[in-house]
Length: 140
Image (spheres, rainbow, N blue to C red):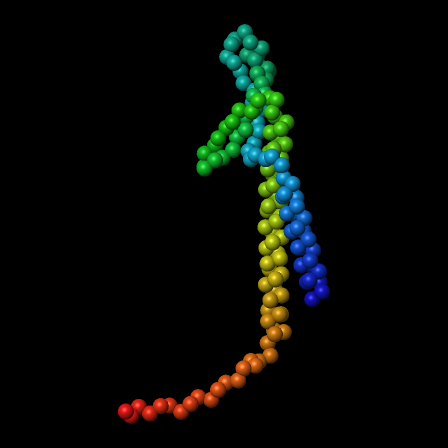
C-alpha cells in the first residue's frame, strides 16, 4: 500500500510540475516553416543555369485550418522568431499530452484504491429493521 501512495504522490508532483511549465509557455504558433527557392524565368538570370538553386529562400508557414491548407508568407527578418514560436507550440503540445497521461494515471490509481477503501468500510449495516405491522383488514 505504501508503494501505491508513494507512486500517487510522485504522479501528483509531476502533474504540478507540468502545470507550472504550461504556465510559462510563451508565444506559439502551429505549422511548418519552409524555405523555397524559385526560378524567375529570365533566360539571362543566374537562376536559369542548370545547377543554380534559384532565388530565395522565400519563407512560408503552412498549416491546416478546418481541413484546408493555409500558407502565410514569413519575412526573412521574422524567420528566427517564427521557428521559436513553432518550437514553443510543439513543447506545449508535448506538455499537454503528458499532463493528460499523468492525470489519467492518477485517476486509475484512485480507482484502484477505491475498492480497498470500500472493503475496509464494509462491516454490516448499523440500522435495524422494524417488524412489519399486520396487514390491514379490507372489510369496510
